[in-house]
Image: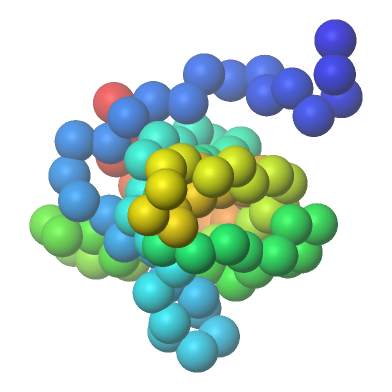
Amino acid sequence: MSENRRRLERRRVEISVLAHNGVDDEPLGKLVNIHEEGLMIMSEGPLQTESIYQLELVLDSAIDSQNTIPLVADCLWQSPASSDGSYWVGFKIVEVSNKSLEIISRLSQ
C-alpha cells in the first residue's frame, strides 16, 4: 500500500466552500471533499505540488458562527480535471486548530 494513501474517507460537502490562499486572499478553487486529515479542491489552474499552503476555507453559510476555516496544508498531487484548464488538487492537512477540526467534522457529516 502506498505511503500517501489516505486513511480516512473524504466526504462531500453539502454547502459551497471556496478555498483561498490565506496569505494574499487569492481564490484557489472550490472545495470538493474533506475529512480531518485532508481535502480536495477543484482549482481553475495548476498549483505547486510538494508545497505548503496557508488555506482559508470560506463557507457560504456559517457553522457555529464561523464563516472561515483557516488551516495549513501540504499540496500532495494534482491532476487535470478537463480540457478547460481546471485541476483536481489533493492536500494533506498539517496544521489546524481544534475549533476548525470541529467545523470540518460538522461540514462533512
